[in-house]
Length: 324
Ligand code: CO
Ligand code: CO
Image (tube, rainbow, N blue to C red; front, top):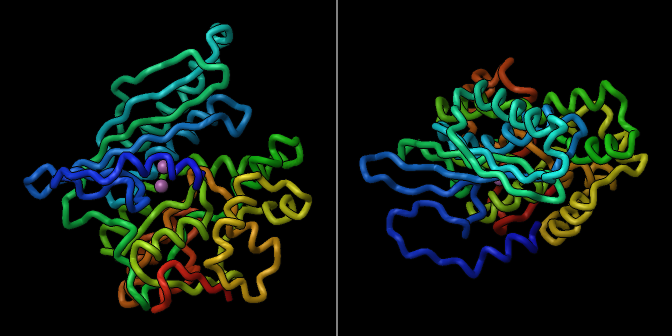
């Protein structure tokens, strides 16, 4: 993924003065100023199936795509389907199930899917283009974190490890179900809570894992962070499955990639792997000023799968993370 992000670099920089956020900051979506105090927020996300059930796959892909809009404190307006599928399997009804899953989550988000595009592809792929809007002054980017801010995470970690275990047939039905429940949960309430509160910065936790996404947020903000390892929520069963060796390749690469910027302290290998676990449709990671922390936690209460204070922003070299 880090290699792939590099591929986009030569397309930059962009000279258009209406561009408020582009790919250069590794933010969650592109933001384009419409001039009247409002801005368009646009993202695209799609991937290959990580669970067997096509309906669940559709739901996960849609929740994941919508998440990048929520991570910027924005409101999704409408979406388009992106679908790749093998032509010779079209008659099996799987495509309908994938699209039905995507539509169910979009409906839940109050977002109509207005069209899309399908191509013949050897491996199925599904996701959405999502168009959203935000009042410029309410835009939440990844560059506003300040020393003293608390770091709040709104979903537990471990979906990468559990998805890998599901593919190996090693995850129990209960563990798999909880992971699917987490991956299909919208970050809508988390976004509502953070915009109502007013926060410093946010991002969603996806492919680079908590440490990777945190590091990017810290780099863009020019600060460092302490992370309280024992306070980071994880999905039931994820740790045991990691211990049994069900570690995604992406998780190992994530850990390798962040290692130069992390002081691991006493954190063991399992802790490190969980903190680096490549998430799909993970929660929001929110930096909030200490005097607003209680308000944010109150607004999140009962509305998100987690509302854990997982760390604190500190005055340190940009991107440095200390585990405690
Ligand atoms: Co994102
Ligand atoms: Co994304």
